[in-house]
Length: 393
Image 1 (cartoon, rainbow, N blue to C red):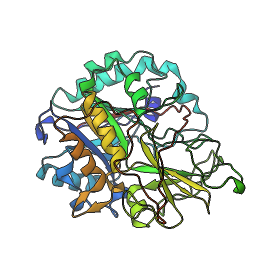
Image 2: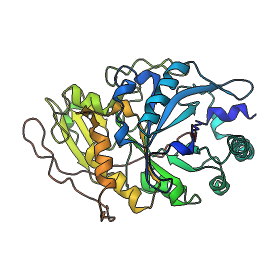
Image 3: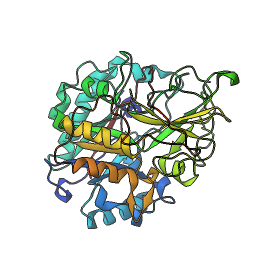
């Protein structure tokens, strides 16, 4: 039964002695996997912009020992990271570990009885000089009581994104706020884990978004609000979005990386959309979105402004820091990631503005033909996100 838990977990571990910052300081944790070797080789990882890096992914064998196919890549990563005073964490499991079509395993409340004892065993085996952290979904469900985790793990990373994956609706991928009671925003996710102290919570921020096709008539004209029904099959995402090898339902994820939005010219810069695209700002969720009326495609994503707002929110909540998926998804100029820079800007703000409700863009975004776009509203559906676990190396 313990093995079943690894469908839900990601495990990371590393030595606390190699920290780039004091353990009481803020952390910036970024994922990097072997699949990122081409777009972001190890030597080009922005070490100065992160404190920890999560290497994905190891698996679990029958003896519950991490099995790693890419030991050489991990060794090279650890060497380079330690030379730059960055900690490396080994991630076990990950979303690439396919769940069965029967989703009962991730809603099986009997696993609750085994998770905390498992973490306690990990802590005993690792000792106090290793980090043990959890990557978790937007709510603790199906676990009813997670207060005991704070005695075992160093922090949890709340993955407050992918809110509309698997939903036949359009909406923000990672809303900061939402006025609808059934929404699954960063605010609701943060509050759902209140039993864990703020200093042991890290807010997860995505460097990507998703495309979807709203159900509407051509006579409806341009889409003006990020709300409404969508086709169940998503359109293809960027060039790195292959057909999913899913035995349950084949199709595309619709994922668009921030770097791809910039490199393809869909976004000319963070404020201006390219030809045939119109950029909007959704006030309720505090996120941007794009619409192409010719292809009837919507892309909800995060940009430097929405990332700064999320980081400011986390700092105002006394969070431990920010977690990022994925370092290779950022858009790099002069060795620095554009979204990582936005995180640093927010972290270095001396007196952050903590009332972030309904913030408008600093300047109204304009599309490629000069049309001014006004902030819009949004409706969200609830989505359960699978929890994960992280260890320090």
